[in-house]
Length: 134
Image (cartoon, rainbow, N blue to C red):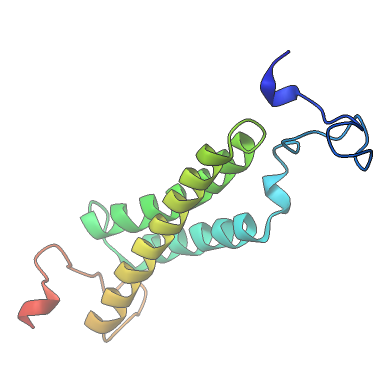
């Protein structure tokens, strides 16, 4: 029998656990997670913001959208992996956290370097901007 599917018996836990209780809980259901819902909303807002305010072909735009997308995708994949590997679930959750933190840092940089956010008139030119030199 596969060790991931092994069930506890009454003798394993001194008669306190039912025979059907799994050692590793079922996986999936990530759409109900608040972290997934917030990450999805963050992605949607980021994509719209970048469309409106950051010029096409900008590395900053690509970086922001990819970081937001990665956060969503890694939460989903981590949740799906939870049924077979808690280690993989934690790794993917940490990748999602790091991606969303990267997005937060890029957004903070944008907030510091832009004075005007009027649609169609202002596009950020971030490729050559280095805040350490400002």
